[in-house]
Amino acid sequence: MNKSVKKEALLNVAERLFYEHGFRGVGLKQIIREADVATMTLYNHFSSKEHLVEEVLKQREDRYWSYLDHFVQEEDETPFLSAVKAHGEWLEEESYQGDMFLRAIEDYVGANNDIENIARSHKSRLLRYFQTLAKRIDEDNHNDLAHYFTLLLEGTTSMTTLYGAEKATEYAMAMANKIVYPPS
Image (cartoon, rainbow, N blue to C red; front, side):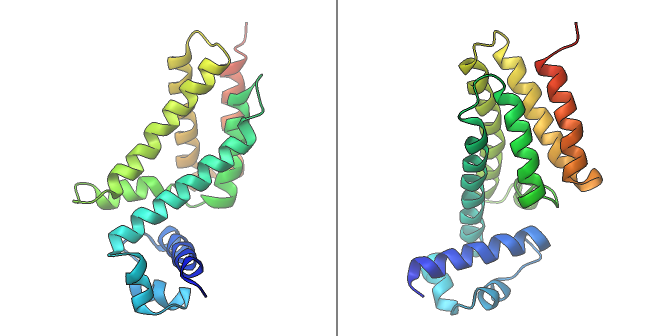
């Protein structure tokens, strides 16, 4: 394996393990073993566990935004509904045990690293994303709409652990339709 393949293997294994067992529940030895790389390989790519966590969060965030954009970019009439549906599918496929970013905030709050900032930035970006969507379709109340949908997606993510992704998304879609098409 070349370096980029090994780095990718480390990131993918680390993301899966961190997601399944939490950031504190996984050691570097386990990641090294499951990625089937040498200890020095890990340290050649990541100076510390915190640096690895930062890169895992960045990788996950990039995948999330690519996923969401794929569903929403061509949708001009109801991009909000497309975003909720896409987020629900993401939850079912990638985030069925809760939100990795919230876990990062909880586990690293007050720590002297960038992990908490990366995770909080992801949440802020969601609000900006919806503000941009609202402006794109010329919504007068773009700020309110952005807050409604940010809260809706965050709530859907949280409720996935209780209801499951499919049911949480079903409720979210019903709410989204009421926001987009309010009863007269």
